[in-house]
Length: 114
Length: 114
Image 1 (tube, rainbow over the protein chains, first blue to last red):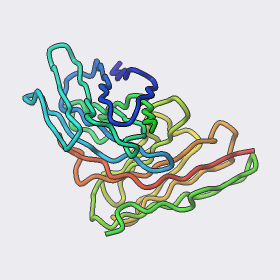
Image 2: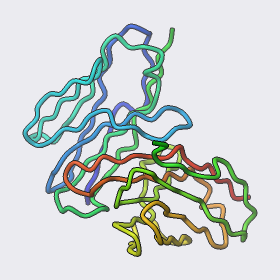
Image 3: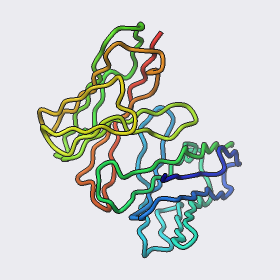
Image 4: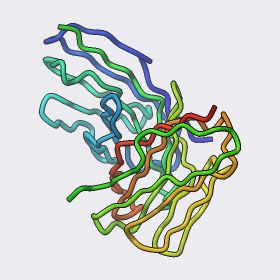
């Protein structure tokens, strides 16, 4: 069964500090991996997509990495801001092409304290 | 563009009542989805549609029904509401289900069944 595990479950850091969120997956065959940000009371919004051939991709202060061999991804947030407080969800798509080919992680709940 | 619009945002139902969650998108996306999100759990797929007139079951379809008469609208019907259906429901759409298909989510509908 395809699975996506995220760690830590929750994280509290001070404003201005960096942090790294982890995502391990067992989805096969792998197509791509997306990180979504979900603000409290809102729907998830895509931050970045990682495909098989990509190792690192940046989107502003967010940098995602992918190691397809070990089936691990990370999301690094640099110089955190209060607006980064949210849940971050890792979503992995299999390459079967079906509309139901997504496996969601449970998310990491990040709190930025002033 | 409004994106994906869900109504209502909040609703309280009594056990055994029925209701419809509305979802509409203005991005001309072929693919639409209904997910439920329970505390501490990943998003679970209830139903999805690959185009007008076509719907299919997801991982947790029991107790729900959908229809897709137009490209824009994808309502979710709850029949005989049960406490287990207390959850936050998200409607989403994507241009394709292909290898890069980004999901665009609505703001969510919080349903409580008492």
